Image (cartoon, protein in one colour):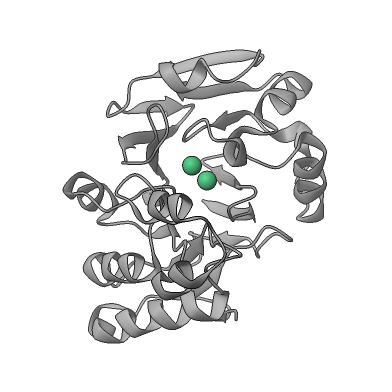
Length: 268
Ligand SMILES: [Zn+2]
Ligand SMILES: [Zn+2]
């Protein structure tokens, strides 16, 4: 299994996954054209995609979904209420939140998260004995979320804002309230706490995602995550990668089948 975060941030989210021979995207907040360019830039022909999985209907997650679906004949996987918001995809594969489904040989668990969308989900994607978790756009970590992300071998985890920066940034009071609410976005501290809680020797890759450009910086997010990782250093021996996603360029492709890390990646 391997995955590439093509874009992550408040403006556009899109991750490429290849598992058990299947190639698909999780969300496509990039335009169709941008997504094609990013895919090609990491050596993936858009024509080789086979599906798109959608977490929720916010524009930064679905902007290019229908375009790519029609252009390449890709089925779109989403729950019913989310699917209603996607205009004319080529094929609709409706799942029930909380019930596993398969994309070919890949097993996917869509689990409920709290966020101001109609029926938002996180995903656990299982193939080849590995588990990749996609967990962004949630206001708080519930017990259900903890249960699902435990045992992840890789996670794309929201680290949206620094609480102090959010309070002092130029957003309106209403927007600040929305972001910090239980239905908004996860702050750096909450992401760090979750990491500390779920860390185990076979969690290999952590990508901090959905960073706000106005109320966070990659340095603050990484610093916070590292502070929590130090507290569980005895369980973090397998960690090879701690990166922050961004909306400007793809991150390196992260592999889940290499027994020995070629190098340790940490960006700033
Ligand atoms: Zn989002
Ligand atoms: Zn959202």
